[in-house]
Structures are given as structure tokens and as C-alpha cells.
Figure 1 (cartoon, helix red, strand yellow):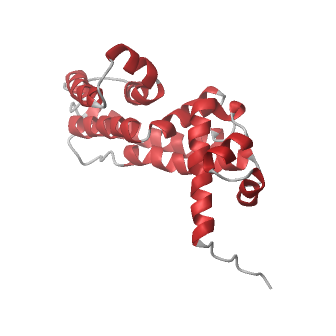
Figure 2 (figure 1 turned 30 degrees about the horizontal axis):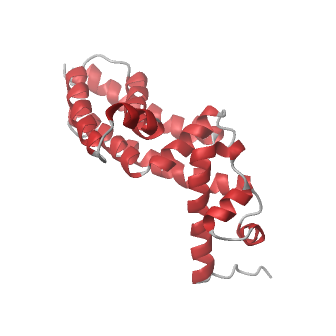
Figure 3 (figure 1 turned 90 degrees about the vertical axis):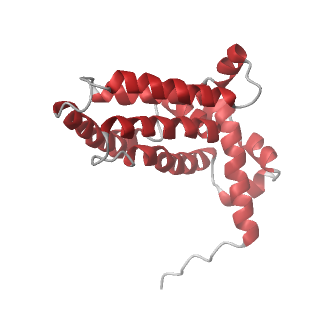
Length: 205
């Protein structure tokens, strides 16, 4: 007879979340190769043996973080509505991506570090569900272009440019802050205004 897994206790859920949050902090700064289980355990306020009770390896923690992150990353693009007004839909997507950089900078850097290293733990998902979703939305954008509702522009490179211009504010936060020296987060408001104007001008037929 197969035994059902026992539900986690409140303490177990708390420790598991503490480990994942600590790992996110460590991985986003040091990358996968530079991070250690000792660093993650120390940041989580747990012993290494206690950490290993929840996760058997550093890679297991990393894979779980990336798996959850991929779902978060795909959500804004899934919201691009083929029935909507084309320029408004794309600008709304730009702003959703920028807001993710503001709210989830560590997650953005974790994803960027994984890509820079050749995406060894998520390459299959990039070539699978991400590619399928991008193909689907690129076809929507191309349909808008063919109908004369958007300027003639390559749909794939449009999406790549949106990722670059929004995720930059998280992945290169130190550089942005070093140049602009903002008091807090006002540079995101400035970026939102700039990107809205930039993409509206680029996309309007």
C-alpha cells in the first residue's frame, strides 16, 4: 500500500520558506557556482544538517527556485490579449515587466545568472514552454502588424528589447543607481514614463 506524504507542520513550512528566501539572496548575489550550502544555511538562520533535512543539495534548492520563477516570469506575457488594442497591450506588458524588476530584483538576477551560465537547469523549459509562448505571442503581434494596427517591426526582437529595457533596472541596479543616484525608487517612475513614450512612438503606425 502506498503511504501518503504527511502534511508539513507550520515550523517545517516556515523553515522551508526561510531556506528558499535565503537561497534567493545568496544565489542572486553569488550565482550558482559561488553559492554554498553553508552560506544559505547561515543566511536562513539554520544549521547545515537542518537545511539538508529539507533539501538534499544546493542544486535541488536552485531548481525549486527557478521552477517557481519561470511561472512568475511567463505570467505577464500570457496576459497579452489578442483581442485588445495592440499598442496599449504591448505598453501594458512593458509596464508589467518593469514592475517585476522593481518588486522582484533578486528573482531577476537569479534568472539572469542562470542564463549567463548557459541555463543548465532550465534550458529545456526555455526551449519548450517559453519558446512556445513567445511563438504564440509573436504570431499575435505579427497579426496586428499585418492588419496595419502596429508599425512594421520584428515581433521577436520587439519582445527581446522589452526584456532588455525592463530587466536592466534589476540586473544592473548598481550601475543605474551609481549613475542616477536616486533617493529611493523614483527612477522606476521615470523609467515607466520614458518606456511608455518610447514604445508608443515605435509601435504606432
